[in-house]
Image 1 (tube, helix red, strand yellow):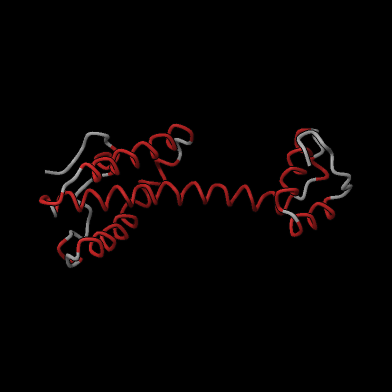
Image 2 (spheres, helix red, strand yellow):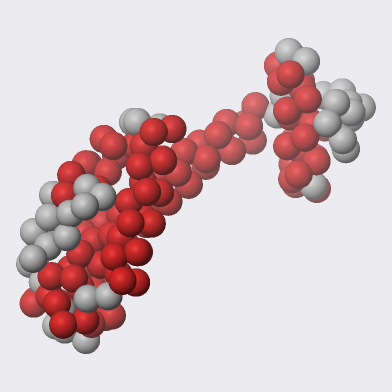
Length: 157
């Protein structure tokens, strides 16, 4: 279905059936209904589910980027002999991704703050696996704050 083409589905139950049959067609149809102001014809249950899922994906993506940053900060601090341009590049890339996400959705900063320690615990386990260092080598509480982790120039000594 091309942009602007109206699918002849007449009811929200027809639209709900389309959701299970062809997700992309359902998306196109839903967008067309929204643009035409035909809210009464929307498959509201699936529409709400998809909007909620979008928010969850954004939160998981920003957490994933933060975890990669924290893993690299731990490796940088606890394996100074292995520091590389690749590690610095990874730090920069994932900090830039978070900066872009926060620019688009500033409310994600509060999400990062609220979940920082949980993400750090995951990063600690991953850093242990990647370095072959015992997990207890790394502090249980993050030695870096969120602002340090996101600072484009910060690297531990």
